[in-house]
Length: 401
Image 1 (cartoon, one colour):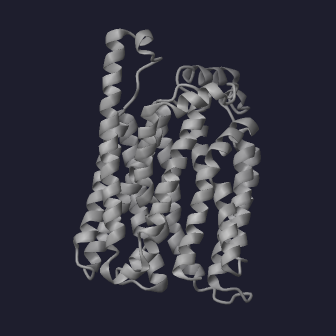
Image 2 (cartoon, rainbow, N blue to C red):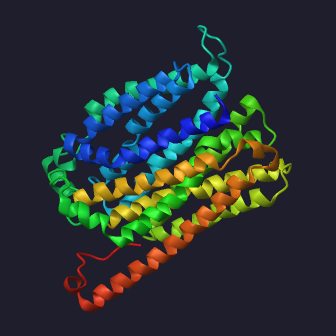
Image 3 (cartoon, helix red, strand yellow):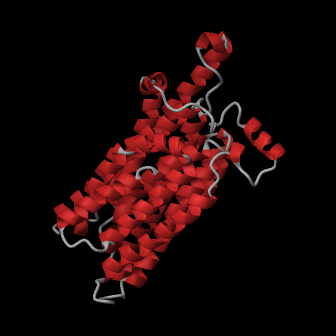
């Protein structure tokens, strides 16, 4: 495959990812979380294994599309699932654990890729084929456990006593999603689509998605441009992901503890922007300094996402609205991820990938501005509600920020 074909294959995944997120969250509620998430896990695991058998550009592109279709429901589905179990003040930390686990998996992925890279022509297969095969199998096996073990809703959890189930339902009465709530209807859909404040959330998430996807896809390429070669470049992707894991958990805990998700996301996005800015300004051969900047950039870009998702979900006041808004939010990240696919250009390796670094810096600054602006708006709306009364202002309860 040419570099252009490789980039198209990456992008096709994101197109499917954007299209199928909203339908997937609908089916998660319709089919029950344990059943739907297990189905998605088995399907994307099988597609990943299938990539190990692809023999041409067309096959890779087709399987990548299917992979995006099935994986589209994972992240918005898990964020939606958390709203059935946790209050708004408890979600950022849980989202962070999910996202940071994916970040940590990126660290392990680099180490695994380093090891599997030595499996050249084992059973006649190239090592990159073994990478897809061996990384797809655990998802297929784990899906069976999810089908039988993952609890759907607190009110149906058999491992809770009757009193504990009642308590779990009571504590989420005002701000959590409910398993018995009606599915999405047109009135709710129209209200969500016409709510201007939510579009600011979507734009902010679009901004963070470009650095997130470019780092996820091109960290081995970036480290190769820092003077590391081949398998060593894979191994050097581990520290940025490992540090980002720790920073993500700390940021999410702090944002929940101080109930200040907007400021935490804005602060971390600025830190990430500084990392990309320094990478762009440093000489291409300043390898050690630019590697340190990569760690700073990854920590900032990854860590501001959990508070953003916790912030959005805490400001949705019905079950169906939360499912649609979360899916739309993550779906709007897909165009940003598509942008992230194109900004690290192969012909800029000797220059230090300036286009990628400058673009990611600008996107993270946009995230910070959006967070601060939306926080100011929520403060104004809350003050207006307190002055005029909730019924006059048309608000059920105050917005969190």
